[in-house]
Image (spheres, rainbow, N blue to C red):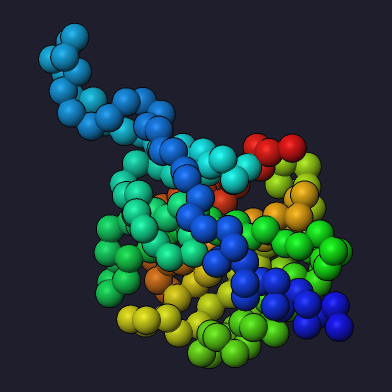
Length: 193
């Protein structure tokens, strides 16, 4: 019964939560000419902060995407092969009466992955901490739209809000892109109480 309620709550959550507002702020200014010095400035990183209780930092070269359905923030990198690497953060409020745990979501997501990802191959699962809160890190591969894909996904639960961070890179992505992806996932922080 609990699993059925949890599934229903997650399916309804996007309609209930609406679009979250996120602010993106360059760490070192915007691209363009500095009026005071006349010198060119570049963005070294962008930190997205959301009133939904999180922040995430992406390095230069990642472009913020707007109006991505059921997503709080999204960034894309330049095309690698036939695919554009992306990182997304999604939050979902969970009805407190369900009393869902991180393990409940892990089991629900594991069952859904098998259905949603063609040629799924789970590469690893690790228990980690995000801002002191238990979290799960998954790495898996499968077929995506346009070719073979590697996903790294972090999900955690705090104060009846589920946070899911997903990094998608094409198979065979350059090592520096993989490292940048690790840094992005590691930068994810919970800022709410």
